[in-house]
Length: 487
Image (tube, rainbow, N blue to C red; front, side, top):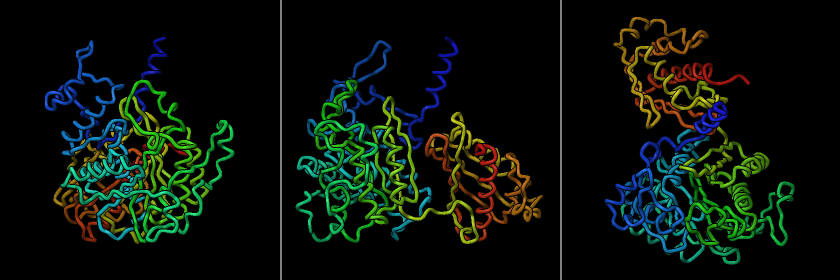
């Protein structure tokens, strides 16, 4: 019996966690503090038998007040929605934003827009809450187009934008017209919009799930085609799709009450059909978006949709799991842009931002273990290292005056060909330095067993960049030797 308990405890500990850059990762909302600061939230807070403050998650008014208080307290955002509209949970939605941030910073696919560091997103079905544009603009300075089709959603989304003048110029709310109204409107990609029915074949996979009178195709308003205008380009699109096929199905979870109208919660075929239409649109729009993404409510749909993406020619497909409390959601991302090669070749030796993937890790190993190895590797080479476990980064500073580096500075030629590098031996690589070198190594969780390691150089001139490229390549070899299981 004790053995079974230990197994269960280990399985629980291995579950994915909140994104490390999520504001609530290490500091979950303090209901007691919020109640003392916001009188409108106080009536919904009570203390349980363990004397911990709680709210009734089945009370829509309580969850709405919590969202309002968190957005105001932690993000300086004024926010409200009318009764019945979908009420988002701030920590969960923040996870999605930070995952997209990881995708954009990973350099897995090349940037398609020549707009410097400015990021432009497209929120499919922004809703009255407009949560993703508000969070993306306030946290990261991103600009957004948020789309919706109902008058209530459009009115309240626009109001939530206007009520935050410090970011209002970053967000456009755009109405989705009916199919009849979009054909053949000028200024949008309607030439390719020939039918509102999904054309990607899902019949074989969905045949066993059909019910009498229920179609598995998507017959709704336009999603991307007919909404994205000619000449527009975006870094990403994101979507919290209608997860369900009926409102009865949507109400099966008695533990929460987040509201939601039929337009927000359901469509024929559920999330599978809705995301299939996004995939179909993306096949036509291709490089209009650097990344296409969507959230999913059912893990069982990931495999089907991923296989369809490979079939239609996606060059990169990524998945992740979002965890907040007892709620799990999944993320799906894909691109049609050519992936950047992982190997360092001569034409990239002077990059100041580099990255590689660690794949095939044992489930018990996570980002923190990799960070600790990075720190040990460079510290043993004589560098100064600062490990930050909350942001999952290691800042490395090495000087040519360091005794260890200076004494061996003439051995740098062996780095390019050495095969005997050990984990705790960073000196041979750091010997490349002829000037001060400062860089940051960050580790991001991609999927269970897969981590992204990114290095960012502070200096920009070519001599240091070339040395950094070689050092980072050696770090990749060392970490893969230690953490990646042989296939």
